[in-house]
Amino acid sequence: MKFFHKRGHTVGLAPGTPVFVGDRKTDKARITVIDYTDAALQEREIERVEDCYGFRDTETVTWLNVNGVHDVDVIRQLCDHFGIHPLVQEDIVNTTQRPKLEEFDDYVYIVLRMLSREPGGELQSEQVSVVLARNVVISFQERPGDVFEPTRDRLRTHKGRIRKLGADYLAYALLDAVVDNYFLIFEPHGEKIEALEETLVSNPDPEHLMAIRAMKRELIFLRKSVWPLRELLAGLLRTETKLIRHQTGVYLRDVYDHTIQVIETIETYRDSVSGMLDIYLTSISNRMNEVMKVLTIIATIFIPLTFIAGIYGMNFEFMPELKWPWAYFAVLGIMAVVAVFMAAYFRRKRWL
Image (cartoon, rainbow, N blue to C red; front, side, top):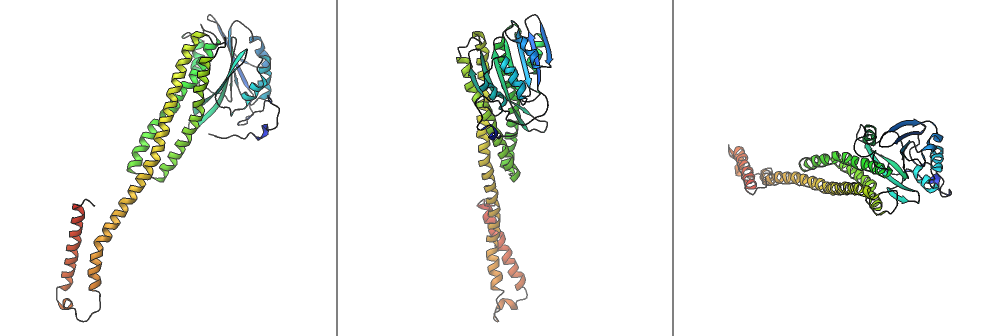
């Protein structure tokens, strides 16, 4: 998971110059199309960008999905045909954008972050750009693999109302799929935080400090990816564009509510992780205090014993006890009685 990308090679270029910013890839961009009405659907992969040109200004609803925004030539050629502004093209290939909404006369441009986890548990973030035009939705992804497969299945099997409604409902379905996937990303955090809190109280370890730091870093990244969605969806609800119909606003409000839940969950987890650091420091301090208490009690018990041993270690000639046959055992007995008495006193005071 990368938090920062270098953008130095874009400095000094003219505004609207599309330059890819992100993890460089060598594979060719892949374009798939789903064109449908309530009665029929066709799905295929596009070999040439020119094959997409016939889907502009049709009466069917078309979803063009582009995998591979690193192929700048393909992005420029496709966007030029559909009349997408050069500044938007620049944002599409720059994968460091924050979630945002931009409205134009003929289309709406949306940027959001799609999150996923690798098999090893590492968090991956991918920029998804969505262009909503008349009867056309174009989505741009960094790489193959996404959370839109349930949406494709609903289109193929004619489940629900997705094929009865327009392109704005399709755009809503894509937003909803991304937001709902956030809940799956956050599920492991709750269990990890709860287990880690119990461990920190009973057995804090330096490795736990590294786990807290990694979790805090990840939550900060999640907050950065999700928080702007609130503003984005609020803008969609307030928009006056004719591309989003009034009945679609009901569904957008539902996505907005889900986004608020996600944000509140992140804030709760962040507070818990911040409190876990205090728990760790407190547990370490308590453990040190316990160790120091035991050592202090041991030292306190041995102080009078050392005093007695010191007296009888002096090389005076006239010490009557030295001539007694049982003097050695008597001194050991006195020392044992003193030690037992002090230990009993400490226990009574609940210092032990």
